[in-house]
Image 1 (tube, protein in one colour):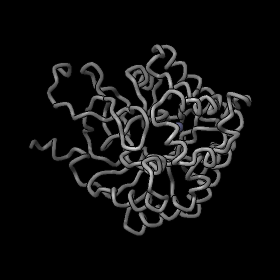
Image 2 (cartoon, protein in one colour):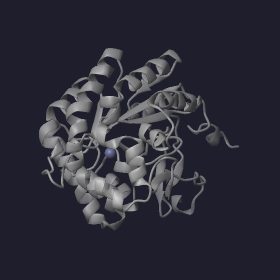
Image 3 (cartoon, protein in one colour):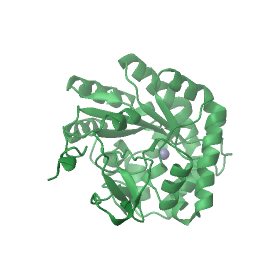
Length: 321
Ligand SMILES: [Zn+2]
């Protein structure tokens, strides 16, 4: 093993960091869940990363996935999605008009930033991204980012520096758009440690901070597991020697499962984990970051494919000359 390899963040020992990412995918999550999670983190004296969908909340269209994605209906019912999201949310964009999330959530975004959290975008049109990313051309993907950035600036009064892709779905177009638009980092995939994504032999400049831990809906979606079981499973999955990143949803952990999130954070803190925003995880892992392709695959409990951190590419690739 070379000296450089021993410094890689997935091999080197780093302080026990738990990056906390909060996604608000819907208007309901942004309006009701985010303030409660902000209250909780203020009480515990913690900072995290918040990523908010900006555009139309068309979650009602997402509910129609029951007809297209095998296993989706069973998962919806096991996770009690209708009670978690509320029937209103499931009708947004179908029988009810789709509210534009950013237009009504400026206050909560400004509050999060003022309280020292990292705030960023979680796409413009979450449902379209999740359902059709691979069918969108590069221009449409870039436009999604641009609209999200514009709406974020109007709502929050600052330019977002970070992003998180819906449903852990990235593509070459989305990774390149993030680079073109000058984001500082992004959390689009599931993986092991922060890395630079490689496309066509070239390492991009926008690092990925992947989610390393299972999510509540994935564990509930596998059936037989309770919110309490989720807490235990996450704590068991925390690995010393590498940063861990947990993603929670404003719709779930910010509402019905707020108590689970609080218990989980308290236990992690008691065990010596430092809870930080993703930008801080990235800042504190050793350099150089590994270079890895982004692939597609499955994670247990999640319907359909997600983007995954691939195996590290060797140091001496031809394009680096
Ligand atoms: Zn989302």
